[in-house]
Length: 192
Ligand SMILES: *[C@@H]1O[C@H](CO)[C@@H](O)[C@H](O)[C@H]1NC(C)=O
Ligand SMILES: *[C@@H]1O[C@H](CO)[C@@H](O)[C@H](O)[C@H]1NC(C)=O
Ligand SMILES: *[C@@H]1O[C@H](CO)[C@@H](O)[C@H](O)[C@H]1NC(C)=O
Image (tube, rainbow, N blue to C red; front, side):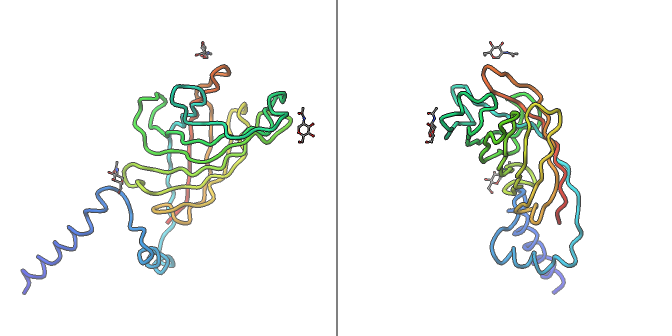
C-alpha cells in the first residue's frame, strides 16, 4: 500500500513537472479561479527585470512601423500625431544578437507639441524561463530625450497576475538618421 502511494505521488510530480518545465503557468479558467481562491494566503513579492528594447524603424526588417500621422506631423518638430505599431525584441544584453526574452508589442504616438514625448501603450510579452507566456502591461509617458523615463506597469498575466510596478527607460544608443534605438529598461513589479 505504501509503495503504491509513492508510485502515485511520482505520477503527480511527473504530470505537473511537464508544463512547468517550459516555465509557463496553467492559464485555464479553473486554474485562474483557484489562484483567486488562494489569493488571501498569497504573499506579495518583488521581481526585478532588466532588459534592452530594440526599436528598429528603418531596416530591411523593421520592428516598428508607422501606421498613421496627421497632415501637420511632417512639419512638426516633435512629430506630433505620428503613430507606430511595434513588435520590438527584448534582449538580455544591448547587442541585437543577444538572447531574446520577450517582445514589447503595442503602439506609441507622439503626443506633445513642446517636446519629443510619446505615449507608450505596450504589452511586454515574455517567452523565456519562468516568465514564458506571462505578460506585463505598460502605459506611460516617454520623453525620449530625458535621461530616465519612469512609466507605470498597470497589470499582468500568468506569473504577473495583479502586477503593479515601475519601468524605467534609459536610451542606450540611438541614431537620429535611422531613428533606430536601443533602450535599457529596469522594471520593478510587485505581484503574487
Ligand atoms: C515557452 O512556452 C512555449 C509554449 O508553452 C513553448 O513551446 C516554448 O518552448 C517555451 N520556451 C521556452 C524558452 O521555455
Ligand atoms: C490638415 O487637415 C485639416 C483637417 O482636415 C485641414 O483643415 C487643414 O487645411 C489641413 N492642413 C494642411 C496643411 O493640409
Ligand atoms: C546613423 O546611421 C547612419 C546610417 O546608417 C550612419 O551613417 C551614421 O554614422 C549613424 N550615426 C551614428 C551617430 O551612429
